[in-house]
Length: 304
Image 1 (cartoon, rainbow, N blue to C red):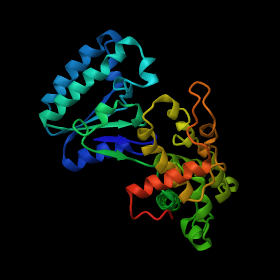
Image 2 (image 1 turned 45 degrees about the vertical axis):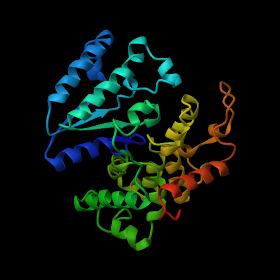
Image 3 (image 1 turned 60 degrees about the horizontal axis):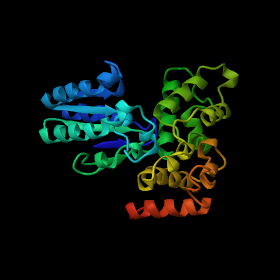
């Protein structure tokens, strides 16, 4: 299967939980494993590694962010690669085919950039299932913040009745600003932001400070990440499968695409000097296409 989506959305965690649920061992393979013998030994190491992997049974194999070894051969990024890597994609196609045919293990490819992977690898036959992992929605983020603050109260890091006590936030209905401020943040980011505020002096451990901390936290998920994607490959469909759900998520939660730097899409409305193309003619066009895309794939989705 292929797990794809922005950084920090739990792709590795899914692989770990799958292995745990099945009672299988987890084997993680990264680009560094292929490069351990130097650039000239990449193909030889790949052959050796796949021979070992094919011999394994009842394991989950996670290929974690090996995009550079399986790049779309029609993309600009592939053309700019070192010669040794340009020949890796065809070889990886065969190796992944053989691993799948062995039917002795479950293998997962995890990537932040599915559109960079060669279509021949993404299609059914080599990869049976494709799953997009998105950042947590507002309800999930509220539960996370509530969990971390609740633990702080339980551990006496903040006193009962403090303005950051979840009971107090419930009573005063003060969750909305915190959930909005944590938009596009994942579990680990929210946990770290809450912990940072809890460690501060009493007079700075406030709801307003937590809101500022969450809002200013560095995001690994942003719409800006896709500014260059539309000029990187001609496979637009592969990009929008990930991009449009994020746009719709932002719109559904009432976030203006201009309020938060993470949601800045201004470059996507400009003509690229190299290609002479513009990804979207207007923000309205982008929002309309995103809503249509999500609705077609989720008939029960009402956009609220």
